[in-house]
Image (cartoon, rainbow, N blue to C red; front, side, top):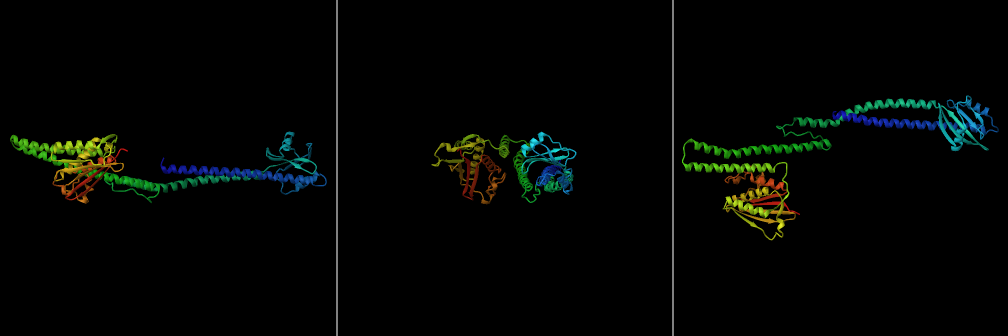
Length: 456
């Protein structure tokens, strides 16, 4: 069932329930009023006849009967019966004896002073009447033909009004549900127009303040993130393809040259060494790409292991010096350290080692003296590792860009690199709920600060 149909049915049911409750309330209120009004009229007629009978100088039932017969406001089938304390009838207009009277009824009237009940078509009022010297039982009965006729007409009117109201509720529900859903239909139409090739399109937001507008805004934000993600993915694939093509082309070219003619052992060895360097570069690039894919996945790093940052630094220094003996790492631990546990953070040891290794290699590579100073600071709730070199520096307007995949600073073109290291570092630190900050001055060097949450 469509939402519009369901809303219309719900609107109809709600209106029907309201109309039913209102109609029942009106009918039973009118019925109660009719009953109360009719018994008040019975009481007035009975009391009037009793006063005529007992307030005269002598009790004359015939005179009272004549007066009542000539009364223009008599009730339909009016019956008035008056009995004394011995249950003798001293006045009765019930010539045919249609109103049943027994001792049990008279006892109830004397006990309760006033009772009402229904006998066939008659509604009967029984009450005690106190005269000067005695108390009498006064029974008044009549049929409320007009009252029941009004109730019958009221039932018909309420039924007709309810039927027409339900029809109006249906029409109104269909109309207003259509108006309410109109923005959703526009959103659906907008979404249908969006495809993988048109992520720049946005969903209609309406006034932007109601629930549908807020939903559309949220969807547009998702589209913006998707568009950014697809563009980044597209750029990443293009750049990765370009970076992979370079060593592969080099390998292919060198092997084709080797196959053109027979060569000496020295030439083959030199070519194979060059090819091996390209293969190593290709493996390194592939590993970095895989790490970026891993750290950029939706599943974040499980920060369960306790890791000592100083131990990671010693390991990184040892690994780097295996391949670059001319790189120098000065690890400075000053008076800021008061407890060895201050060095401990939660995280993935391998990824943190990769991040720190990338920063140190960059610092040494771009510094004329191939030296980097590493020191610790311990601001509240953080462990801060600071890397400072005296290298070529990075232009201020490019500092933010160097954290984008495959971007290299304009003054770094003469140095070998792929532009993956710093983006990888940034992603790893973010996955560890940390922060990275870089400041640089051209020709003087660069300072990189890593902040990781301390174990509280």
